[in-house]
Image (cartoon, rainbow, N blue to C red):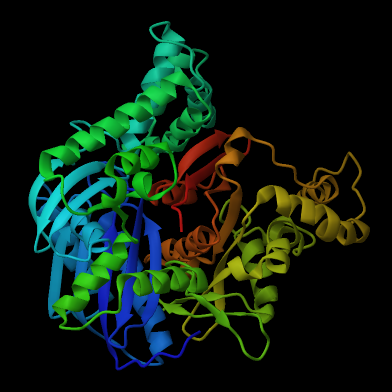
Length: 558
């Protein structure tokens, strides 16, 4: 980690979009101390809870900044760019930002809430005056003067507009698939892509009704998952997808023409226009050397916050590189970050204190015995399974130990104030690779230790021993988009108060930082409290099984 000339004064930059969110902390020295990431929370198009999300991200980012500064930090200014912070939703957004800042610590002397468009423009323009063309979850063109919106076209949400956005691309793709199935439109490869999403939700027997169920069950932001498939099919030459892409490009350029004077640079922002693909390529061809690609919007938020604090910030490119490095080095929100432990060369976790007095921390080898006990004493659908097993180590061998042995850097431990573990969450980036590793490394010695039981033995011990001998082989359609998986267990004393959310959020953010596109987990059908918790934090049902549910969520790009 680079040396920082930290004076204790920092500014906060916040970017909240429909798909993902970030909080970054910049020191007066010009060093980015921390970056935390999480899911999106657009008031109109996603299910994220803005207040809880921001409180979580802010708390983690500031804790990480304090660690980097080796002491307390004072927030001089905060600029939050929030999707949905226009006049229609501004009062709600401001109230939730204020509440989140109150939870995170003393209110900064300067707090400014702007739209996500302002911070996106500030992340790409050398001048406070100019034009932004954004296509991500939504789509909008905007003319700025002094970083203030002067004229806007579109950005009206997925119902009324957002032409050329990721959601628009997805909905057009779904409509094309429905027309193909219904005989109203030409055949298209998009039908198979839509069927892949349908397969995750379960079929009715009528593929058209399956699409109806799909759009009813998902938020618009979740339906945006089909956008990459539309551009892939277009790149492969599918005529229907090519037409959708051409209309997206034309729609974006038309919106731009309404606000743009056809002179000066145009800042391109949003995932559709900053990532390589046919929509970006089409817009760039039309704009030529007028087009400039914005950095991450949170960089723009930091820029504006630094200005509000009276600082001279380093060049945008330098701050953008630091944000990327901080995210990669520390991981996003909730991991507590990772740094190099000079004594062992192993990743060293940075503990995150919670308002409840507990701490989310990394795994230590000395935790193993206690975590095995947590696994056992929560192993009966959340209840104590001690009386169920003759060998109390079996649940830990099957559901915990391999994760700690293979990917300890993804493990998180919930600790009391005295450091004693009271819960954990473990994960793997790739279910297939994890299962292959277990077959090579984890199961063989356990198979020697535990002979295969007789067919007549119906005990819980025998059931787990059979799992040891058969191994685990996951082959489900939803695995393509949710290849990672996790487990979480917490003693009763650590449950409630947001501890579970913080713990699982830490692991989800670690998976996000490592590039996992999505994650799943299994939960017993009798564990209603856990099911309710997972649904509340945004997971959705991927499959109903004889023993319970498989739930999952897509993860934002790091």
